[in-house]
Length: 413
Image (cartoon, rainbow, N blue to C red; front, side):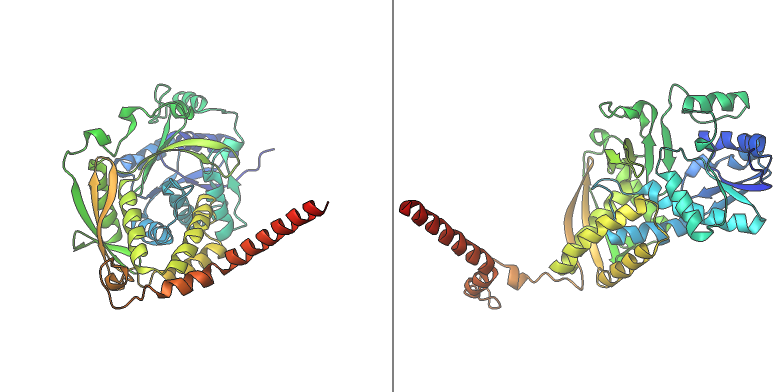
């Protein structure tokens, strides 16, 4: 017999999955359903969402503005860490899930709910991201994951269920791919995109223009950083949300930030995803360039390995873990002098660095110049190479000795 719950808080997006979950929860668990919609920058997608949730059977709706928290406390720390999953994915959905799930648990406590629910499928990464956050913040809270329980086996089944319950959804059988939008990116997956040979339809992209249709003149943008945090665009100081929105607009009109990737999901399968991350692409390019100017070689190289591990933690839903907090402490120590300005050139889908400067620059023109200088004795290089190459020299001598002894033994035979 299915356990009955009195009150369940559902992470509600207004999309196909969560729209059908409200009546399904009421029918199968006999519970009151409270919908929580998180504003992480979906824009127009939130229009009418409260009315829709109530019409679907929710008893109450919370619409939480999490935009600043999302950018300042999740996106920017990942940016400072240099976190990019498998070299391409800038983690837009991955970073949004813990901030949403955190607020969901807070609301569940506030209203006295005895369970939380989400609309993630049993094949995806998001179920892990939501539920690891629940476990980290309230391990005693029961979790309902309808996609792991109900008889609906596909998005087409969910569309039919919605139609039977008179629930309008923004997905049709003719356009079955799903989208997830926030301030950092828009993602597309499923449906016609499941064949990795199939090119994304030109009309699918909602944010960026096609690079070939971008302006014929390049645009230059200057991004200022303080201790690794982006603080200004073209000399104007902006708050986290306004800054990202400004860079999104610049990148989008030049076709910046489209990614088409086959990625390794946490659950073990490969999946095909298409992403638009215009502002994030600009920020990562600028931040990485400023680190090249201000970090010493050993720190920068070690941090590159940390960035890979940090990206894995975010992708795997392990935001609220001791390791992520420890890595943040390391990143914080590396970012104290990542302060300065980077000038980027954006043109038809491409980002190139045009200039960089910092009061903490480790670039010494007198040392680096190919012209005459008075601070670097080129003759010193001979001794350095001898010492640096000593292991190679010793190995080579041994190989020559062994080869000589082998020839001698062969001759005596």
